[in-house]
View 1 (cartoon, helix red, strand yellow):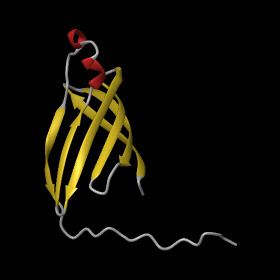
View 2 (cartoon, rainbow, N blue to C red; view 1 turned 30 degrees about the vertical axis):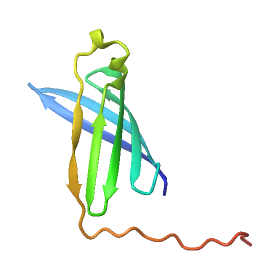
View 3 (cartoon, rainbow, N blue to C red; view 1 turned 30 degrees about the horizontal axis):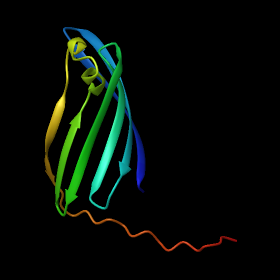
Length: 107
């Protein structure tokens, strides 16, 4: 599929206090080897956490760049934290399934 949605819940315990968080995400395949993602997260009692990222698949090599709190770019003086992740993954044994031919009309 060219589009995917996701949900993640996480909980963190720090100094005996439980801090819940969740993320909603939308992923879209833009080109054969390029995908983009947008996310919205509730973390650290903050509802204004929007993230974005890209990944490029080059055979068994996957390069990625993702960041959160991108709304802070609009008001840099208000940013307390930003997470930026980049790197590469080596993907072994994955073969993309070919979509079965769909008839033009279904009965």
